[in-house]
Image (cartoon, rainbow, N blue to C red; front, side, top):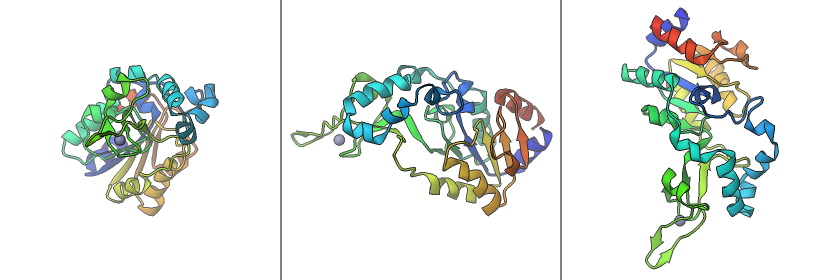
Amino acid sequence: MEAIATTLKKAKRIAVLTGAGVSTASGIPDFRSAGGIWEQDRSREYYMSSDYFHEHPVDFWKKYKDIFQIKLVGNYQPNEVHAFLHELEDNGKEVPIITQNVDGLHEKAGNNRIIEYHGSLTTATCPTCGTQYGFSHVMEHETPRCTTTYGSHLCNDILKPDIVLFGDPITQHDKAEAIIDLADVLLVLGTSLFVMPFNFLPDYAKYQRNLPTILINREPTAKDELFDYVVHDNLTQVIQKIKQSM
Ligand SMILES: [Zn+2]
């Protein structure tokens, strides 16, 4: 733990990868990992696909709000792990975060540079005109539509949520690599590194950039061997110990 604290202390730029384990401490259900919401009902992958959105947008929105328990999203609060990453930034470090989480909590915690690799539940965008809408608009209507007007013409298209749906391309991977290019260390928190291509990022940091790499996750992952430091324990407790050593 002390070696991790020393490594983080010395670094000026800490690239952070985060996953579901960071959000679960805020009471957010784990969608993808073993025993998570996707595994309980495989049909959810079918409904949460870009094909289903395009073919049945009204029903898609119903299922989307249900599956992601969207009513609760506004209530979630950042936890100690989010706060720790914000403190690092407050202490003068650059702490760009590349997150798989879609709950917007790193932003709520106040971090400046966040890549939402799988998008966000908190916003939706009009596929026709590109106007983005916030959470309150998404919640106001069962099927949220675009209210932008051009002269007397109302756009009125059904919005698409800003999460990456099954079948959608990942658009943030190059940006994520560019962040790792500038980092002094890679810190990976609360992810089983199961989902591709996100799980290529530690390989990139280690083998292309030769960065020191740290992994903290409750369970062993398929990529443990790649890391210089590996801790399998409760993330919140580990972060508390690291803070004490810093
Ligand atoms: Zn529009």
